[in-house]
Length: 269
Ligand code: BTN
Image 1 (cartoon, rainbow, N blue to C red):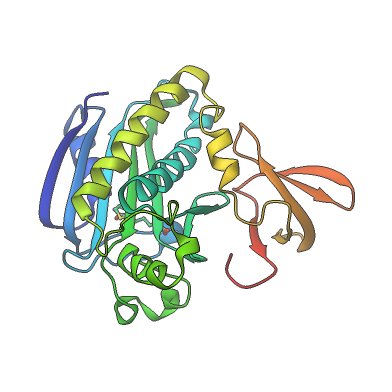
Image 2 (image 1 turned 120 degrees about the horizontal axis):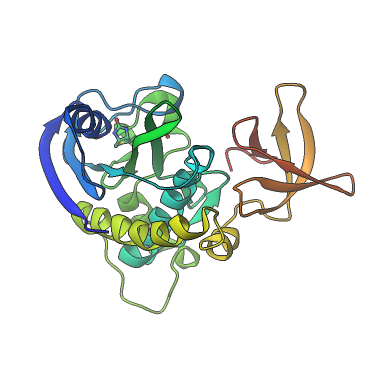
């Protein structure tokens, strides 16, 4: 994939910019739009996503996947793995993944991913994968509704100085400040590698091992928030379709991310 980076100081939403390019004509696969701040950043389920000036990563990539339309949501899991690897490569911090796509550092969420697709007549037009990563935020810079469960890479780097178990290599010299550009480039380089494999297999086999090693609550009790009624299970692993395999009273069950959410029994993770 040929990655082309474009940067705006201010934009409404990097996902929106890719959509505008898509609507104008042929937006090339690998076009990345990043911004210093977004005035109308969007999160999942219609929520707003705040990107204060030059404090976080707000970045989106245009794609023309050749896979079946039903498999496009798997790109969000690939993006999650790309972010987890980028944080490890650039900051030496341990990451975990809360299924399906929350990246966790020291038990808090550091990143959000919004994948959107334009399609007509059952044919994919383009896909945009948008990623927001908290980089330099301090605790008073989060919106109140997410403050208790959010963390930035700078906060995590400071915490790791006191708690060396947060480092991947505790014996190394470590940085104190993360770099927005460095993290952005690492994310998309990783993504391009995983994406190439995904286009061949259409499944998540290329990231499965790395993903499951980081799965938070693996082999631990979780609460499955099924709209038909919540129940307890033990989280086992993600399979190559992106479903979470859980054990419910000795029987294995596969759960789909569209249907339910999963909570650890102790707080957010
Ligand atoms: C979430 O709700 O967790 C997903 C948040 C996704 C935010 C990113 S920031 C870059 C891109 N542009 C947007 O407007 N949203 C995504």
